[in-house]
Length: 260
Image (cartoon, rainbow, N blue to C red; front, side):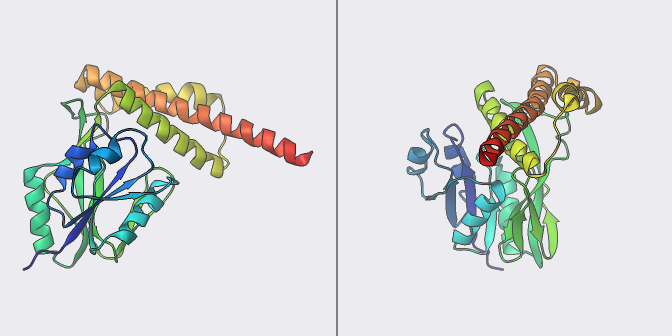
């Protein structure tokens, strides 16, 4: 059976340390689209060195950003690759094989292997990190909040045996910037839901998050990396509610001005 043509889509925002390897990772694709949120580093200049289409769009949320790029894709089959993900040769062969015989499936999910620099992380709740990455755009669509968007699909989903390598943590500064970005988005989502923020959220929830990641989910078995990652995620929770308090304060000031 002939291989279905596929468009690979890579969302970016200041991904100069990842973007070239990401593009090489989807070399099997018939079209590559980089959907960029107006990066201020060298991301765009590096993309121009490769055979990829660049679309720039102001970021509002992950779902709409990806759906926008999907609409621009030439082909019905889509592969979404985060810039910090890599596809092994074994997984590439599996993807190509799936595109040659889709078996009436509308998409495929895959597990991810998380890396701290180049050390594989086995614990801390990441063993079951699974995402839909290959799918038909006429049967699937991204939905959801600002963070942790999900794909809704009409049909059956298959699963790849091989995993994606996820190099989310390549430097302290880069990972901290990512956590802060997520904290802002989550705070905006909580504000829209009119969620409370109190002593529990700001003082108790962060250490609870650390305890769950490091002890309950066996992060301590990853050694120093487990401590760093659990600490970062604990700090991410702290930042989320700090940002939420700031948003409520700004809203109160705005409401006060309107009332006057």
